[in-house]
Structure formats: structure tokens, C-alpha cells
Amino acid sequence: MDFKHVPVLLDQCIENLNIRPDGVYVDGTIGGAGHSVHICERLSGEGTLIGIDRDQDALKAARERLAGMSCRKYFVQACYADIKAVLAELGIERIDGALLDIGVSSFQLDNAERGFSYMQDAPLDMRMNQEDTLTAYDIVNTYDQREIAEIIRKYGEERWAARIAQFIDKARRDKPIASTGELVEIIKAAIPAKARRNGPHPAKRTFQALRIEVNDELGQLENAIDDYFDVLDHGGRFCIITFHSLEDRIVKEKFQKRVHPCTCPPEFPVCVCGKVADVRKVTGKPIIPGAEEEEQNPRARSAKLRVCEKI
Image (spheres, rainbow, N blue to C red):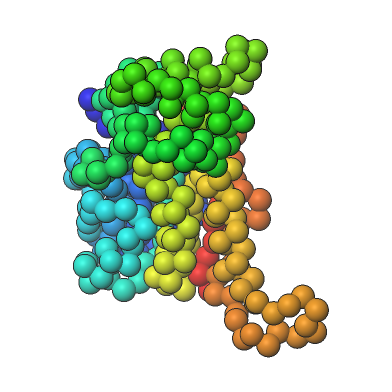
């Protein structure tokens, strides 16, 4: 299956990266190189792209797609949160820009074998890095019922989390829940028919929650943001695309703390902590797709782009 990656908010990302032809840029979630091909088009032979992804299939596709580009290219199988270790291995100290496109790729959703989609029957997997050990199967079949309910509530913001976990626990007593199709039917049975008539697919929130837990997506995002700011050179831009409120909240709060680092109590007349901002916001409110992009690419509908610059 071809690695498809429809780049979201493409023009806005490229514009806000403010690419210098001889600069060093990181695509921390390179996927099928949907964004990176346009970054490379703006780089000269002196410029550098560092493409990072957990998924070896993504890196293979990106390597092939960018083969004809003149800039220097490095492809690294790692989590984007490992940016400092990746740069140390490459002998690079500073970068001029970075892009993170958080979440699951179109290829991973469309490839049934990966187990990300509630629309296709497949083994319960959901690993972005196929070399990782924890799978959705493990969570569904071995986690305590209360743990499952908390994961679905916290990461899926699902009002029926406790009931879904109860139905999962009951079903797995007879036999392990092995496929996405089995899990979808259990979720449908757990959510009352009236609640299933409106809104998204009944399994959407639960599948999102399991995927986030399998890949530690929010933990990785939380840990990564400051590290990227640390390695950005002066004037470097950091762009992050998120797709749901949990991700966007983390980005918004981490950006805010870096822009306003003072920890003095509000009643203090002057700052005494001495913490000074080293970044500025390029975008106030997040950038969202226009109606035309949403129509052409429905998966872009919930996307939000936030940008900061190192000063």
C-alpha cells in the first residue's frame, strides 16, 4: 500500500516556517513527506532537512519521495520527542525551524493491518512504531476495568467511558478481544441507541483514547516542546499542528509558559524571579483550515496550527 500523506495547513506551515535556503529544518513527524517536499523545494544544496518518524514505512516513503531534492537529508527512526538525542547523533547543535504534525497519519488510518481504524476490521494494534511492545490488544485485554474507563474518559473525552469499560470487561471474560471489529461492536452495544444517532462514529473517541495510550502521545508532546525551543537558533520558528483539544491545550499552555516564564506571585509589583522570555508568539489564535481545504480533506477539519519564534 502506498504511504499517503495529505499535508494539512500546508501553505500556512511553509509560510510560518520562514525558510532560509541554507537553514536546518526538522520535520519531526515526516510521514509521507507531504510537508517536507515543500520545505526541501525551498532549501538550497547548503540547506538541511532532518526527517524523523516512529514508523519505518513512513521513513521509507519519505526517502523515496525526497530522493531528487538537492538539500542534505537525514532520515531518523525515532520519536520526535527525542530531538536532542537525534541532533547529538548527527553532530548538529542548532536548527532554524521545526514542524510537528501530531497524531495518526492518513496511511496509518487507511492501512487496515495497523489497527488504527474503526472502519475496517483488523488486529488490535495501533502502534506507530511497530517495534514497540505495547498494543491496543494488551490494553483492552489486560488493563483493569477502572484503568480502561479512565483512559477512555481522559484521552477520548467519552461520556460513556465507564459503561464501555464494563462491556469490554464482560466480553473479554469469554474470550480475548482480538480485532477492531469486535471492539467496535462492543462499544456500539455499550452506548445507548439514542446516543448513537447523532455525532461522530460511536467508536471514534474510544479508538482515539487507546491510540494515545499505546503511543504515549500526550506525554511525548508535553516533554518535547521545551526541548525544541532549546535547540532552535535565534529567529527560528516552531510550528505545531494538533487535531483535538487535549493536544492543543498542551501546546497552548507550554507556549504560554515559555512566552511568560515569570513565576512571581501576581501581587508582586516587579519581577524578582529573573526569568525572561526567549520566545514570542507568531500566532495569537490558532490558524485553522479554510472551507476549501476542509471540503477537499475532511481530516483537516479539526486541525489547529500554533507558531512561536525563538528570540
